[in-house]
Length: 304
Image 1 (cartoon, rainbow, N blue to C red):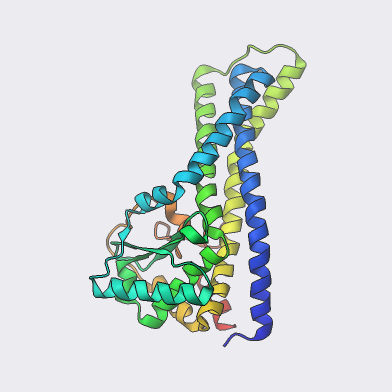
Image 2: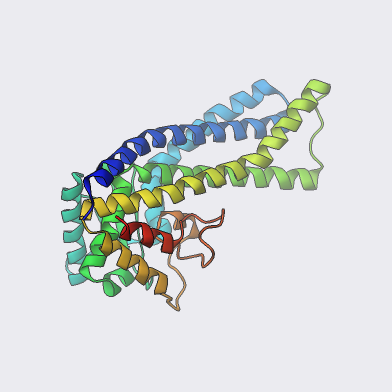
């Protein structure tokens, strides 16, 4: 059982997580606008034209990304609504309903991904529009205690508002990387542009190019650091919701030992949303990993 001190600590982390979500989403949106501004200045070499170019495009992209985020994730994961006529999926729906009551949240929509991997993810703009998706591999290979642990973890992502920051930042980080690549290759093949004259223009141009180079690195590392920290928090919050840290710990052990011969289903773009990244079999403690080491997650859960 989770002691009262750790319960209060988890609740404090949740409150801070919600505040950080607003801050990080705002910073990511501003960074994206700055990158477009730099992109505009490199090509127009006029700060006013670049501003007119950057602000509406940046805001528009963020708004569109937000509005279609859920449907985009579902499509990228190749998921389908859970079928209540199939026994395993009917039990999944009941488990999600039970956990949503325990979390004090609206019932999320339940989806299933036809995949041999043991995995799950949550998405949505807010708790009222939450979605939980579980793979058929998880439904077949996990017992009810372990499945409950996985569902509680994903419900925690909804409760902690991780779903918002994940769906928005995935789109923004990808767009920043794409813009940087466009600028790099256009300058490589076209030799850059040199319409601007004067030392001031050259300084601004150098700053714009530096921003284009560094922005995707900064955005990616920031998102990865946030993602790993939020996975730990979702583990803790999930254990608090289910009152059984061992369920999720056992599920993570099975995920670690699971080695399907088939390829992971869906797109790599949604890999950071999964409880465990199915596309990478590498050292999870590295800077390029979206998830913390499974062994450390298990250790922390069993110390609760």
